[in-house]
Image (cartoon, rainbow, N blue to C red; front, side, top):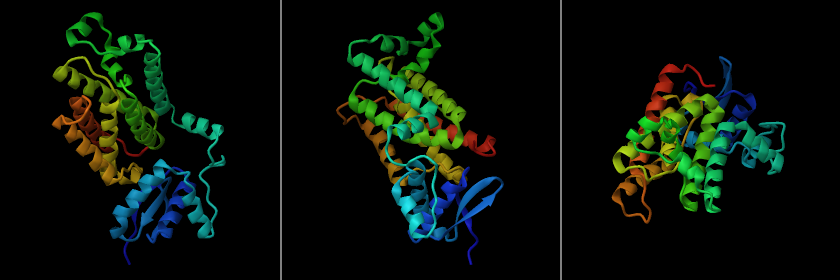
Amino acid sequence: MSMPFLLVSFNQERAARLLTNYLNSQGIVAQYSFHSGEHAVQLLNESDKDVASDIASEFIQFPQDKKYQQAAWDSGQTVTLSDRNSGVSLNGMWQQLRDIPVTTSILLTCLLVYLLAMVGFFWPYKVLAIEPLPQLLENHQWWRLIGPALIHFSVLHIVFNLLWWWTLGGQIERLLGRATLVMLFLFSALLSNIGQLLVSGENFGGLSGVVYALVGCVWWLGWLRPSWGLMMPKPLIGFLLVWLVVGYADILWVSMANTAHTVGLISGCVFAFILSRFTSKKG
C-alpha cells in the first residue's frame, strides 16, 4: 500500500474535510489528518497529484461552491465552512470584503481613481503618476514609484487586472496573511514600475506588473511549498505566459507595459523563493 503524501493543509478542520470528501467523490483517494496544528488533506496515489492539485486550487478560490457541500451530503457527512449563509447576500459579500482587507483596499482604490477620472477628476492621476528619477530625487515624492499600479486607462484594462488581483491576492491574503500581501504588492510594484520607467519613460500605468508578481508567487509557492495551499491551474499559468510573449510581439490593439509584466513576474518568483526559505509555516 502506498504511503499517503500531503496535498494541502488548512488552519481549519472543516475546510480540510470538505475538500477530502469532494476528492473522494471524484474518484481520487484522499484522507484527512491532523498534525502539528494543521489540518491536512493527503493523497494515497501519487498519480492523482496533478488532478487533485487543480481541484484544490479551485476549492481555495471558491470554497463556498455548493458542489463541495453536496459531496459531503452524498457521503453521509455534514460539513460547513462557516456559520454564515453561503448564499449570495449583501452581508455575505460584505463579510468577504472584510476577510481580505488588503485585497479589498487596493481594489477599491483602483476603482475610485478610475471612476474619478471618468467623471473628469484627473488629480489622482497627476498625484500618482511616476516621474523621472532625477525629478524624484529633487522633490522626494517617492510614493510615485508605487502610484502607477493604481492607475488604469480603460474598462478592459482595469477589469482584467482587478479580476486577477481579487482572485490571487485574496488567495495569498487568506493563506499567508495581510503582511505578506502588502510586502509583495510594494516589492513588485516598486520593481516593475522602475523597470518600465527606465525602459519606456513615465507614460504608463496599471496593476498588471503586480498581477504578474502574484502569478509568479502562487506558481512557485505551489511548487516549492505545496502544503501551504497556494495553487494555480497549469492552463492559466500557460495562458498568462503566452499573453506575456504576445505583448512583446506587438500585435495587440493596445500598448502593453511589457517590462513591468516581466519584472513583476520575476519579482513574484523571487519573493516566493525567499518566502519559502525563510518562513517556516504559513500564517
